[in-house]
Figure 1 (cartoon, rainbow, N blue to C red):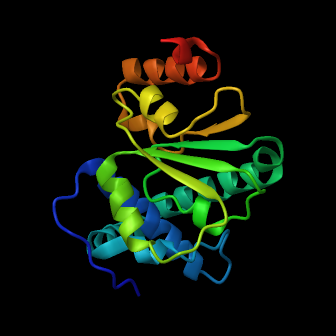
Figure 2 (tube, one colour):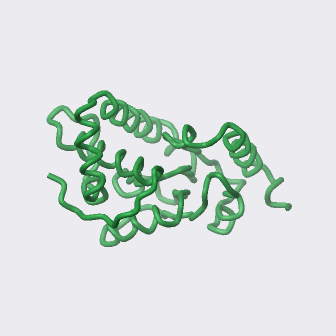
Length: 194
C-alpha cells in the first residue's frame, strides 16, 4: 500500500512523526474513516510502513492517532479558523493540515519542528499547491522557539491558535513549563521587547 522510500537514521521523534503519518494513511484507507488525509501516504516512507505494521499488530494506538486527528481537525474547523488568523503547530511533525484543510483567506500557519523533519515534508510535498500561507519554522521545542517564530513573521497582536498535538510527552516537565512561558510571552509584548 505505501511505497515511498525514506532515508535511514531516523531518530525517535522523527519515528513518531512517521508513525503518526502512517496511522493517518491507514485511517484514510478505511471505509468508515474519521478523516481524509490524501498526503499522509506520501510522507510515510519505508520506516513508517514498518512502524505501521507493528502498530496494526498492537491496534489501539492507531485508534488514538485517528481520534486525536479528528478532534483537532474538528476544533480547527468549528472554532479556531473562524476566529483567528494565525495557527502555530508546535512539534508539527508530518502534519498535513496546511495542505488538506480549507482555510480562510489571510490565515498563516506556522509549523514548528526540527529542520530535518520540515525539510523531509517539504521534499515530499513540494508539488502540492497550498491555499494558505504555510511557514515552516525550524526550531527545537527543547530550545528557543520565540526567536525563530518572530523571524518567520509571527505577530503577537494577531489572534493565534496554538496546537501541541502529541509532542509534550517527549519533553521533560521543565521544558514543557518553559514552552508554556514562551507561548505566554509571545501572546504579549514581553518577548518582542527583548
